[in-house]
Amino acid sequence: MIELVSYGAFFLTLALTFAIMCLGLNVQWGQTGLFNVGVAGFVGIGAYVSALVTTPDLPERLGGFGWPIAVGWLAAALAGAVAAALLGALTIRLRADYLAIATFGFAVVVQLCVLNLQSVTGGPFGISFIPRPFGALAGDPLIFGLLNLAVVAAVTLGVYAALEHLTRSPWGRVLRAIREDEQAATALGKNAISFRLQAFAMGGAIMGLAGAVQGHFIGYISPEAYVPILTFQVWAMLIVGGSGNNRGAILGAIVVWAFWAASGALIAAIVPPEEQARASALKIVMIGLAICLVLLLRPRGLLGELKTVSRHVDDGKDAKT
Amino acid sequence: MPHVIAASGLSLSFGGVKAVDDMSIQLRRGEFLGLIGPNGAGKTTLFNMLAGTYKADAGCILINGVDASRGRASARIGMGLGRTFQIPRPFPHMTVIENVLTGAQNQAAETILANFLRIGKVAAQERAAIDKAKGILNFLKLDHLMHEPARVLSGGQRKLLELARVLMADPSVILLDEPAAGVNPALLGFIIDRVRDLNARGTSILLIEHNMDMVARLCHRVVVMVGGRYLTEGSPQAVAANPAVIHAYLGVAAQ
Ligand SMILES: Nc1ncnc2c1ncn2[C@@H]1O[C@H](COP(=O)(O)OP(=O)(O)O)[C@@H](O)[C@H]1O
Ligand SMILES: [Mg+2]
Image 1 (tube, each protein chain N blue to C red):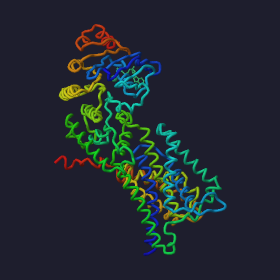
Image 2 (image 1 turned 30 degrees about the horizontal axis):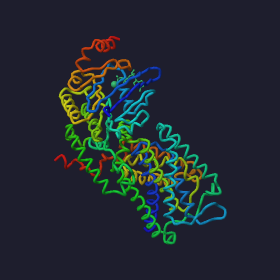
Image 3 (image 1 turned 120 degrees about the horizontal axis):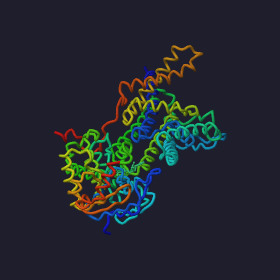
Image 4 (image 1 turned 60 degrees about the vertical axis):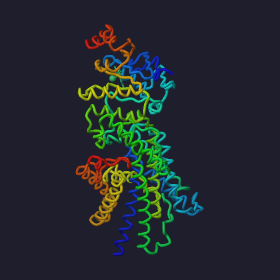
């Protein structure tokens, strides 16, 4: 029983770290229509920045400032925002397909840098002993797991609440207007490039934060965690959950992560050990199948985009009576 | 500063085609000016230059006395210039009132931080904007559709919605691109009525329109364009009777 609760807490905590990434992608794609296929790059930057800020000083590696975890998380968000703002400043004017290529290339570059800047990032060995929240309580897996779940859930909730607040604000309204018809929005005085850049940077900040939260939860990061498959997973989560809907982003992350974990367990159970490394590619196929199924049955995802209105407009039901 | 728009020598080519060629036009404060010409004369292209959507190859544009020749399209509404599109461009998945609210200017809450740091001011501004939007929707008889997504509107209602969005910004001059095209006669009378009303309240208007009856009923003065160039101008009656204008229309029709 205790083991089950522990595992449930572990699973949900990890799923929520993906949910945060998914919320970031929802700002960019769901709200603004920015086609970012470099999610892994922003997540990786956040994870590494926070690890460098919070780990103790080590002789064989540059950095290691030993600062509190919260500082690391803030630095990660900031780094994600700066990276997105810089990349965006160069590419946000491009057509959607060029933006996709640019973000993909960016993620590859980040991964290669992390892999090769051994003196800063530990190279292929990654960084271990990243401080974990409530690390002193790690001896009691149940308490430790539940406290970590509480922290990550609080971060997820905070990001969700802030994004809902913005979605229903004039800022969110302008993003939707630009997504729907840029020329019309421009004629109404909205500087499309500036708003796109803001949304891109905000999404980058949230992805950076998510990477940090995940890195601290696991306690270890390495370059192979930030490969294109991560980007694919986050996209799958957003599509399944419902692009444009913040709750959908969270739900999609949990559902797809459950699916991913379950198919991993299934493969482990039925495939002979010597074939398992190869068979794990089947997980990707299964996620692809899941996306197809959801899109066939619920084209807008599990929770589609809502008819979002300003929080100050009475929603019309009482206005019509 | 008698002119709200003073444009001179405007030219623009698409590839080898000169869509607008050394065109000048002035709109006086409070004036209702018509711009007519056969299809392909370059009227919409001229609008797009005035509105900043296209950068002119040559020429100069003053809006309310300020040089706007090199300015961004998104800065035009702040200079007092609003425009509608020949083919309406609603935000289809947003409700009608959200469409109109998008036209509000200088909203603190269009910056991220103000939404968290100046909640009181944001709420007050948004409530004021909603009241104003409702007033405009009422004025344009769209209020019963306020909470519908804009995609359900008819062609004529979309033209009204574009006008409503622009009115939200209190422009001193409005460019209207064929507001009557494809609009049923009952709604047409209403649009004419409302547009005249706006002009009577002091808004200068530049109107592209093929419906000569509407032009005659509304415009103080009419400028005629043909082949990207200025042809002539005068009162609606004088222009309609001008043989050169008739020839231009028939000549294009006969091609
Ligand atoms: N974006 C564009 N690209 C290429 N040619 C264009 C474009 N817009 C307009 N044109 C051409 O410019 C000329 C003038 O068009 P337009 O300004 O739409 O005329 P009008 O509004 O008077 O009917 C036409 O020959 C048209 O085909
Ligand atoms: Mg036209």
